[in-house]
Every structure is written in C-alpha cells, then in structure tokens.
Amino acid sequence: MTIYEQLGVPRIINACGTVTRLGGAPMPAAVLDAFIEGAGHWVSLEQLQAAASKRIAGHTGTEAALVTSGAAAALTLAAAAIMTDHDLGRMERLPQTSGYANEFIMAREQRSGYDHAVRAAGATLVEVGFNEIVSNAGVRRTETWEYEAAIGERTAGILYCFSRHSAPPLNEVIEMARGHSLPVIVDAAGELPPRSNLRDIPASGADLVAFSGGKAIRGPQSTGVLCGRRRWISAAALQMLDMDDHFQLWDPPAELIDRKKLTGHPRHGIGRGLKVSKEEIVALLVALDLFAGGAYDSERVEQRERLQTIVDQLQKTTIECQIRDPDDGESWPTLELAVPQRDPQAAFALCRQLRNGTPPIYVGHGRLHEGILVVNPLCIDRDDARLVADQIVAIQSLV
Ligand SMILES: *Cc1c(COP(=O)(O)O)cnc(C)c1O
Image (cartoon, rainbow, N blue to C red; front, side):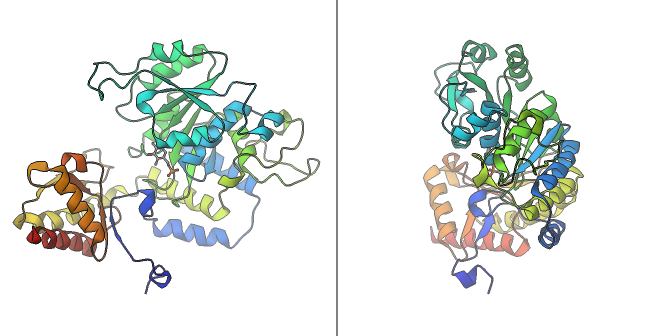
C-alpha cells in the first residue's frame, strides 16, 4: 500500500504533465536527496536565501533572486516589493495601499487567474487593449502606446505575462516603461523550456521575473523563483522572511537585504504566509542546476517511446493519434488523441470516463473544445502508458 492509499487517497495516472492540481513534476533522485540532506542540518534562512540568490543569479544573469513558494507567490512578493520598496509603514499596512501608487498596467488579453496573486498584495490592475481577435471584432493585438496612455499618478508598474506569442513584444514595453521610470514584472512561470529563457527573459531588462520551480525545473512543487533587481529582491525578501528578531542583533546578509535602507525593524510582512523551508530551497537549487545543465534532455527518446506504445495500441480504434515532438532538443513530446469528427462532446465524455476509471486517468484537457485529448509523458512510466491505452480501447469498445 502506498502512503496515499493508507490515507484512502487512490493513486491516479497523471498523463497531464506538471499541473499543480495533480501533484506537479517528478523530482529527480538528486533533488530528493538534497531535500533529505537539507532536513538534517540547521542554517540561517536569510543566509541560505542569500546563497540561493547568488546561485540563481548565476543561472539567470540577474542581480539577485529569491526562492519563493511558487511563481504565484513570487508575483505577490514582486508587487508588494515595488509598491512598498523599503518603506516600513507601507509594508506594515499591506494589502492596504491607499495613498500611494498601487496600480499595475496589464494587457487585457494577458490576464488570467494567476494575476490574483498580484491583486493579493493590494495592487489594482488597470487593463489596456482589447481582445479583438478572440472576440472576432478586430485584427489588432494590444499595442505599446496603450500602456503608455494609461500611465498616471497611481501607476506603480507594469505586469506582463510572457509567452512565445505575447504581444506587444516585451522589450518594447520595457523600453517604454523605462522612459517613465516604471518597473516591469514578468510572469514567466511556465516558459521553460527552452532553458535559454532563464537568461533571455531577464535580459530583456525586466525588473522582476517569476518562474515556477515545480514545473519543468522539477524542483519541489511548492517552489518558485523571483529574480531581478537587487533593490526589489531586498524588499521582497523583507516581506517574506521571518522578522522576529531584535534590530540591534539582526545582521542580514548585505547581498540579499539592504539593512541601510531601513529606519527600523519590520514585523512579519505580507509574504510571511508564503514561506519556503531550507529543504525546499536546497532541493530547488539542485533541480535548477540539473535543468539548466540540460540533464533532462536525454529522457525525450524514452518519452517518445512511451507515447508510441499508446499509438500502437490505439491503431484498432477510431481515435486519431498524432505525436508532437518539438525539435528544440529540450521540450518533451506530447500525444494528441482526436476523437471521431473532433466532436467536443465526445472528447469531454472520453475525458470523464478516463477520470472515472480504475485507476483514474487524467489527460491534458486544454483542447477538449477542439475534440482533442493530450497525453503528456512526463509523469507516466511504460506500464502507465499501457494502462492509458487499455482504458481508451475498453471505453471505445463500449460506444
Ligand atoms: C503555473 C503558472 C503560475 C503559477 O506557478 P506556481 O509555481 O504553481 O505558483 C503563474 N503564472 C502562469 C502563467 C503559470 O503558468
């Protein structure tokens, strides 16, 4: 019996990938070893975060960094840091932000449930642009002048959600923001691989960039990275770390926290509930080293074989199979399963039946409206792949 079965929680097959709701990415043995070793010793969290800052900065080319409890937490801390800087009164009052700049400008088309993390710090979002292509009522995406036209007294910064397809280009938005001395926060949580993004996105000049630690990096599910300018990282660290000490005794590492900017000792900040443990920090650092060094690339061949097993078994069904294998040498392949006539209702039905099976199987559900289920090989082994195919064959034989 697994530790989960002892709790009465059934095992599932996660053919969905790194999604949080199903437990995230598989941690390599070296990452788990780091977690266990880290648990056996005690260190100052400030000093550990300072060392992590240096290590992450080396990978990202930034001035400083912080290990956070996920990319969402990184976004909350980023917004908090920019709104308060090192002002004790402002830090103390968050998420109350009346009386100073608390607005972040964001393209309407880039909004998602994750921007709740920025609002959680007390920030208000000001939307610009439209979503005319989705509404089929126009031909243009958001343009940089629209951000500029929205800047006012209450503007604290710009929030940009990065993807390969995001518009307007990040560097254009940053250049405009520079002209107004406004910081830019970039949500790049899921934009790895390619690992070059670890450097390229910060190199665009963004002030703060958030990455997930529990997606392709394969660190603990509850970790993330906030990297960027030292000034903001210092303000973010102050609002996340435990502050229960005496000011006259407190000697934080200068490379992480700029004590000289403080007129007193802050109490626990808005990020105190977003703490990260020493074990999680060292595990994330090992995972980041592995990811940045390309250690996961060699798994792609086996992942493709796993998907091919499913394709072979589904030959006899009406499901149309297509393996997508990105040629970047880094991204994992995926398998698209199209139901007959690409009927969305049939796709939802198949997805539901797979979830209701024994064991429950979860496949990628982002394209059901196109009649497509997606199998991600990251969290399944050969036997799981066979089970996925068996279940689909069984369900198909009933219809
Ligand atoms: C996954 C994701 C997040 C949240 O990341 P966590 O590390 O799970 O907190 C935020 N923004 C985007 C765009 C994401 O894809």
